[in-house]
Length: 634
Image 1 (tube, helix red, strand yellow):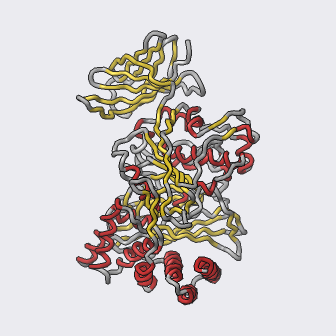
Image 2 (cartoon, one colour):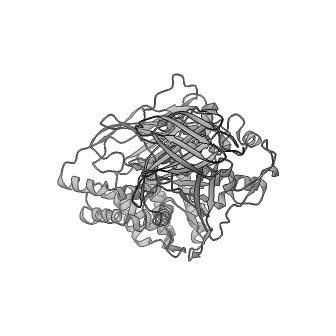
Image 3 (cartoon, one colour):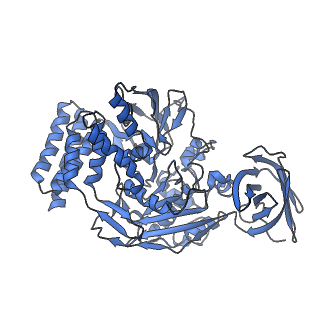
């Protein structure tokens, strides 16, 4: 009898069963799993899922006790498959079955590429030494080997219309492209995913996965051609891994070292997950031996645990547009200090004394060496996911901060912490993320950070108090409400956007500026609107062409100039805003004034009495900014 594993479908008068049998064929997991749907008239609705493991097989009969997402009248599952027929008894109902596919799941991949960004096709694994044997792998073939059919729609090409020379994308532009694309997807969970092949990201990332608290969760990803382009075997291999990795996130697969943050938590692999030979690991962080050792041992496949998730994860935990990334629930346990810490690193989370109601919550992260000099990677910002932030709310509930977009860095610059560079600092806006606003209510919050070193060490900070004040005046209340809208939170996360999907949020920020311009929180509205005006903005229109709105230097200078005169924003953000203001002034043709802004910035931080080492870094930033502005305006 040929292999029987694959997808079966059956109906009775009121329900539909999609059953996955996984007992033979390539890498069998010895499981049964399925999804149940209720049918009423011409509509079908998801009811629940189950998985059976272990199973027993005697002849044509496979059975076992199922774990269900709902209360089943009978947890025993029985499947019979013969050459002539197949039946299943699940939750007390018996279904005649038809084998509809040798694959366990089938997903439609829609891919668009910006003109000039050449999509990956395939890689011959025999081109470089490998332990897994020679085969030609496309992205679809990589998922086929996992038992998932990836049906590739006719690829689209997005022509560039007046984009100029800057084809670097930022998160706001990608969010806009995503919302336009997903408008055609609908709100329901579906086996469909979009991949954008763009030129490059302003942050130098190889890829991102779009992850939101609305209907767009895990429905798309982007890869950046300039970071992985090339015809060499090494470049083709990197492209294959990047494409499979980013789409893996859309299937709700976490990075190898983050699986303990899933809900329910999953066990970490060797060396805190960094020892996993998986598409979902970072090759440069592989332990032991780094990138070279990874490629020498990598079999070009998912791990056994990842394979089980792809084939048998519950419907809403895998299907695009359903449960959020990494969870069936957002709540986590607070990070705990390790029993022993010999990493030689200290992580601190700092915040100002208190925040107004509705004020964007920004914390400063500081990583320093505790004794002798240490070398570590520089990914301290939580958007890169080597650093996590846990927020314990006034109610006692602890949630994990999830960024709106998940940046995959695939590159770990080494930072040496010593007497000449004793600490590394990052400013992080954590007020809003995938799950919405995290500081909506007045009260005391406890914020902890966890930094994951390249060797798997997990350095946990002490708790940082973040206090959100109650509104005192009517204006405090009105401005706070205007700042706390969902679209406004996305605009703070993205530092502004032209997206029509965020029009209401922009109107609310404009109301803050126009009606409450003297209120202390108006500085944040000016900052977001000013930063967005200072940059160009790319828009993939309904005509599938790339349109670019040029910078509005006059508006950005007016808004950002007002921001730099305020004392409200933190030092790191003030530094960034001042440099962006200088760029706007230089673009208007006043290079001398732009240079003066850089000199004034250095003097301002010196007057604040900042650490001499940090002041030296600020001076270097000012020098580099002047050089860049001179080159741009030459």
